Every structure is written in structure tokens, then in C-alpha cells.
Length: 72
Image (cartoon, rainbow, N blue to C red; front, side, top):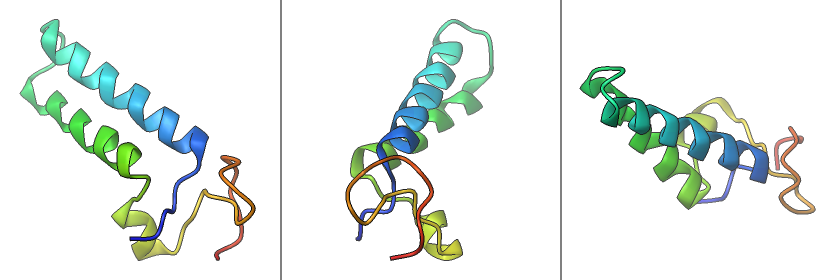
């Protein structure tokens, strides 16, 4: 697996995942909110299978700058 996510992308995924799981725990949404585990998992491994499929990378070749960069 080649890293295809930048820092900002990963941060947003963690925040979204935590919010979804928190909403489930506080009974605001149904159990489907546990889907928040997926963005957290992809952020932790810095790899998104959907990005591979569509040829997207938010990781810069010079490092993890968090901006959209040309395909490596």
C-alpha cells in the first residue's frame, strides 16, 4: 500500500469518524453511525482504497502538505 493521503485529509477523517461515533453514543443517530470507524481506520493507515480506484492523492511528493497534488 502506497500512502495516498495528506495530513489535512487524515485530520478531517478522524474528526468526522469521532463525531459520528459520538453521535451514536449520545443516542442522536442510529447504529449506522458506527460507520465512523472506517474514516478513522483509513486515516490511521494513510491509505484510501477509493483514492486508488479514482487515481487521487492528497499527499504531495515532497511530503505531506495536505493539498491536492499531481498523481505520483
